[in-house]
View 1 (cartoon, helix red, strand yellow):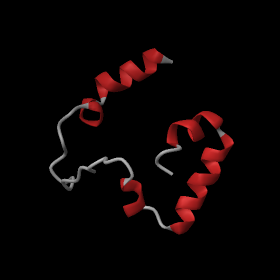
View 2 (cartoon, rainbow, N blue to C red):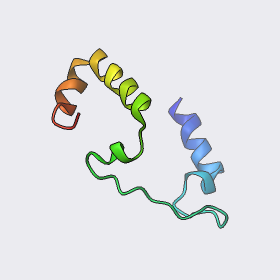
View 3 (tube, rainbow, N blue to C red):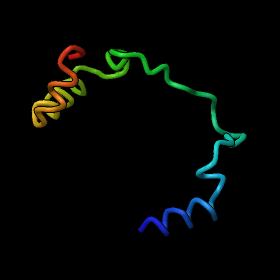
Length: 66
């Protein structure tokens, strides 16, 4: 399977490369801790909370951010 990925990366270099297509809008998310609150609505936040509850390690890692 790794061979398929490498072949894809070699034959479709624009897709996997660092060069940005000319028609792509310039957008880079800040990625600040807790910034998700500015992007998720109440329903989305509840869905994430339910998902985190399913995985004890995630709950431990995210405990100070939720």
